[in-house]
Every structure is written in C-alpha cells, then in structure tokens.
Image (cartoon, rainbow, N blue to C red):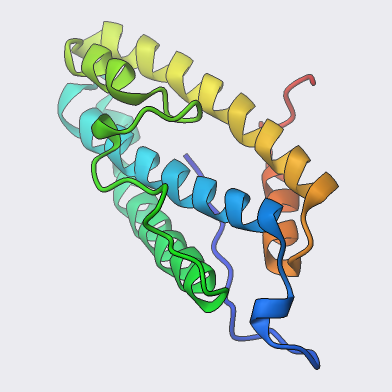
Length: 165
C-alpha cells in the first residue's frame, strides 16, 4: 500500500492558491483523503486479522505516509476555501463511497481472519487500485491544479498501478 506525499510549500505564481484549482481538483483531493483514510482502516484490520505476519512490518511507515498526505491535502482544500470534511470520513465504515465500498466492505472484512481475510483484502486492494487509477485519469484530463495533477500522475506512474482501462 504505497503512498506518495508532496509538500505545498513550493507553490508559486502571481495568483493566489484559490485561483489555481477547479471542481475536478476539489473532487480528486477529497477522494485522496477518503482513499488514504480507507488505507488506514485496511491497515488496522490487517494488523489483527492477517495470516501473513510478514506484511505487517511496512504498516507503520505506510500509516505515517497516509496521515501526512491526509493532512497536506486537507490543508490544500482549506486554502482553496473549501471544506475537506464535506466528503471525507472519520470512520470509513460509516461512509458509502464508490471508491471505499462503504460499510458492507468493512463489515465483510471484519468477519474474516487468516488466509480468507488475506485473499479478500487482496481483492479489495485491487478494486481500490482500479478506482484510484480511474480517478487519476479523470484528474489528468479535467484537473487544473498542478499539485493535484502531480499526485494523479504519480498514481498512474506507480509500479503495479497500470491496470488495463
């Protein structure tokens, strides 16, 4: 579950940050927050339900990266004068979002342990990757903000992220 973090301190130009985005950027940024929060939920479940104990070593670093990206992107959304909380989630299980698959997905994963959990988690992650790629492609086509475009391009360029259209 690799993530990419970016800093917003390098923004420059003659206009304000509020002039550098469009609705596609806001939608993509909010979806990034939701996706990272979903990643945190999946990691929490994996910590107690996986049979593959070897995969747990990378969770702490991935959690730190996810939290950093959530904080950075939420700050960006606020700088645009938007509310990052309007579509983000405090508890992934309480939201029904196509990217996250809502309560049903979390409930199903919570009912599994060991190898059956690992297989279901693998399928869940693959589905989320396909959604993330579709959203990144949409952002590249419709977005305006340079940071959001960079984030979208990084999703598309990540190893293992090139699913067929």
